[in-house]
Image (cartoon, rainbow, N blue to C red):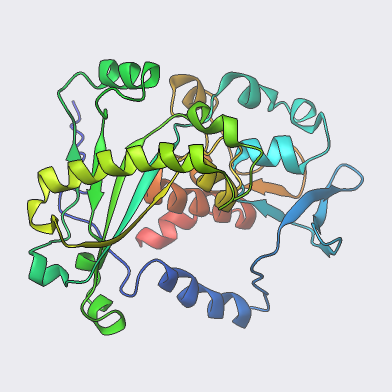
Length: 310
């Protein structure tokens, strides 16, 4: 008889000193030292396929970047539906991913800025997960039917309290994030509008959720009441605009049983094309990280995870 102990995050988690941008700042020199180039604000229009082999990518500006190996972190659905020729997913035997697995849930995120330090406000790095009661499925179902129903879940995080370098970079300031779930369908009427040009009705809808999230923040962190200097709410349309996920999905593919029965792999049936990121594994930072390890193992044809653990 074997026993398995799961201790994921029970003893805390790491946070990059200097914020998430430090991950790119640290990785980019390694890529460039190996002869690679990192591009920003460079959108890919399609993956080039020649002779039944991935041959590179074509950018939105028309440039072609050719390579014998293409690794996509755009998400499996985005890659199959938007970057490959029509019908490619079915020819590769991956059409079921698009027809069976729904996108994951979308979300609202309230970004809060304060003209006080985390220390002055007594904020710690501990995240708060808030639920109205244990009936999670029922609460979420009621919220989907009626946006005025109680929020089914609220997550409050304190980035500035986690980063020991924050006060050096932004003296006298603190930040908080307040997140809840929200379906893309509520915001679909404004899908054809542009960022920051979505109209008064959209802004009014956002304002109602901003007030509700602030109410949750004050209820659970009362010492910040009256201290909020700035707040801004992102919606599923914001996620779509900045990340390219067509329905503002927070975690790529949905996490239903059908998705995990598919046993998705990094190496695709199209030679030269590999997938990476959270869609190969599970939601969140750890899932995205492990998806990268899976892709590296597939491309290099060796167990990279075993090497890391050693």
